[in-house]
Amino acid sequence: MSMGFSPWQQRAFERALASLDSGRLGHGLLVCGPAKLGKRALVDAIVARLLCQDASGAQPACGHCRACKLQQAGTHADAYRISFALNDKGEPRNVIVVEQIRDLGQKISLTAQLGGAIVSVIDPAEALNANAANALLKTLEEPQDGRYLILVSDTPYRLPATIRSRCQRIELRPPPLEEARAWLAGQGIDGSRIDEALALADGHPGAALALIEAQGLQLRRAVEKDLDALAQNRIALSETVKAWLDDRPAERLAHAAACVRDRGRLALLALLAQGSGEAFAELADWYDQANRVRAQLDTPLRSDLLLGELLLRWREVAAA
Ligand SMILES: [Zn+2]
Image 1 (cartoon, protein in one colour):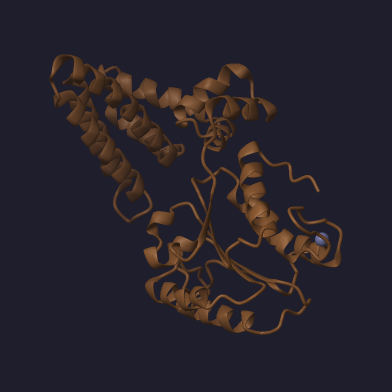
Image 2: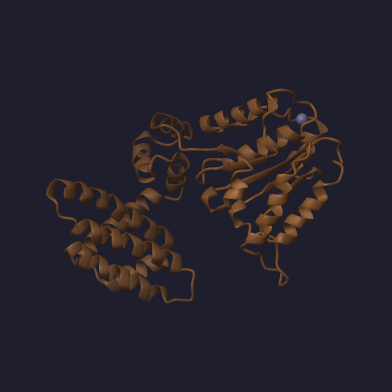
């Protein structure tokens, strides 16, 4: 069965299959790595393989047995998925709570309904609150044959060390530059934009693709132009604040921060050459402030005031 995997997904999948084939696949797995590298598709392929009734050894799931069909339809009775549940008011929570883990523990202690493996996915695992993590630890400490727990996380360092140490890690990492280039070209991305997007995304091909798809390169150029115009007093602060708030403010602030981070690197190089650290420290401060304001956009604080203050500060930093 072809998964349409990127080379880095394929490598991780083959490592998992080889572990399974040699009887070394852990009952607790931690599938981790930065967002947008394809962790969920990798997890789906691992879940399918563990449930498949027809695959053996290092083969992927067959794709056509009863278990595979049920898994594809999302109705396999021995596949569980834990994520954000609704609270008493019917609103989604932003943590995974202990009741969910206890409930899961009961379900997976029963006999598999299709007679094969029982596979549970917890996603995003860093959302487990402290009690839920403790309850999960007990399950991880008592592995049972044919029971698999797969934790998925963009930020595995936010998981308790006790949990991490009991899981076998399957990590997706941004690939070497040449492979990232080739993959983006394979997605139909024009060669002239590939290097620019990869540079902006720190070599991360999934993030580079997302940037291109969201017209991110144009937005980044527009933001950079605004920062320069502000620094040179060529545009009014209030107009810029309004324009940014009207159109994708969080993305603009992320671009502004990234842009200043890149300039900070240049300033750092200049510092190494000349021995003056002020410019770098100012840029680093502004970078932090831009990220703070981005995080505050969704709070009741007045976005126009926050952004106004940030861009005013930019004018001072850039003038210095
Ligand atoms: Zn199958």
